[in-house]
Length: 321
Image (cartoon, rainbow, N blue to C red; front, top):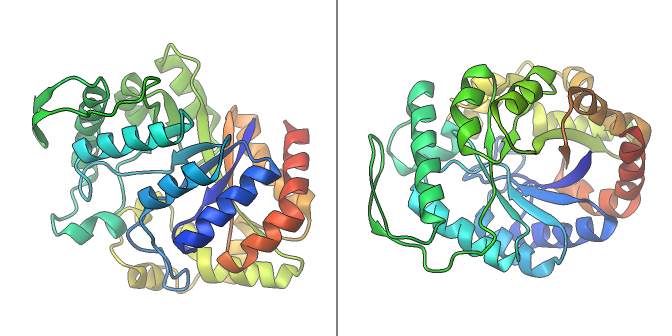
């Protein structure tokens, strides 16, 4: 298994994220994923810089670590033709190190442009059309596309990376695997379910990556680690069925008002024990995932985590695999 570091745009400013990206490469993470948010999940997190500007800077500030969006919604806030151009440019800047991670999005980030928030079935159809448009534009050819949800009129991307842009797509079950596996290079998901891995492998003919993410809260003081995880990551308890439809941090705060610190600590490894934190990877290893990105919770903990804990965490996680 390859292990990654998460550039959590919801909890850190743009300059800090670039600095963390450099440090994470130096420590030895295999890849780095960036969220793509217009708003933080909770007010306590306090940030939401533009992910594509940050990634452009990260591409120049690093030299070997792979980069990825985790994930971009190419259907409401962004038109897929614009996502195709951004991804192509970033791949050139990163010299082939970039993977475009795509998903059907959350209301939190997409409602802001005033186009409404479609139902889940519509969102899935929109994402499928968007991927088709992005793939066509990444050929460098002139594209005209007339779909049910998107139109493209005589568009061409003039700066196209020779190696193309690999695409990962977020899935949650058999129906989304059947829909998106033919269009994607890699699978992204949130839960360590072996049936997702086997279902994806059965639906594809390529040696694809199966990519996931897991939060941890390292701190020398376990009580502080739990407090931070509860303060900034209790939104995680709602699950994606809830998270996709709440439109504001205030809504997430209300929805998680009765989530207790001990509830968060029961699902997120917290404290200084690196063996316990590394064990968060075990369910994903057992399920057959190939890539796992750690999310260290809390901006104020990043420098110390990267300097004091990350190398040891990677050693223990790699020993598991």
